[in-house]
Amino acid sequence: MTKKPLLVMLIPFLLAACLIEAGDSPPDTISIQLEARRQALTVQLLKERATLLRRDPEIAAIHKRIQELYRQLDAALAEKPEIRRIQTQIEAIAQTLDRRRQAPSGQVPDDAGKRSK
Image (cartoon, rainbow, N blue to C red; front, side, top):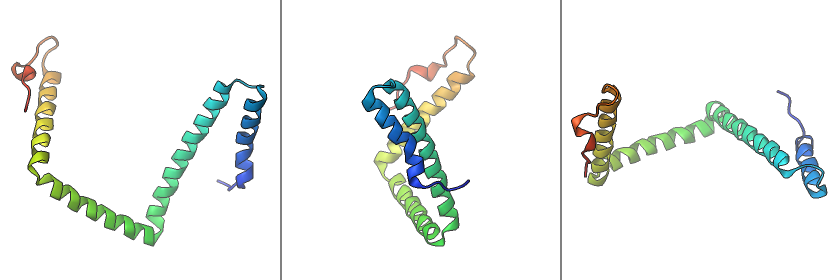
């Protein structure tokens, strides 16, 4: 992929802005084009960030430290009773949903109406 100067990339947006001001094009068309360009640039940004995380040793080291801190935070939070209580409720609901999906059509397992507190 070749790199284009910023001005070349901005020309469609500048033209779109002029058209909106002049009333020559419906704003919906321009909005759709701008939204598509924004989404494409967001994907490009995410790909570039991922590339830098792999290639730049300094950034990779920072990322590794952050991941380790996140694991420590997750472990510390998982020990808290409030978190364990909510996690237990989530797991109970997941099990109920699994049983409901496996039940023959039209039949509801006995515990489907029970709620965890």
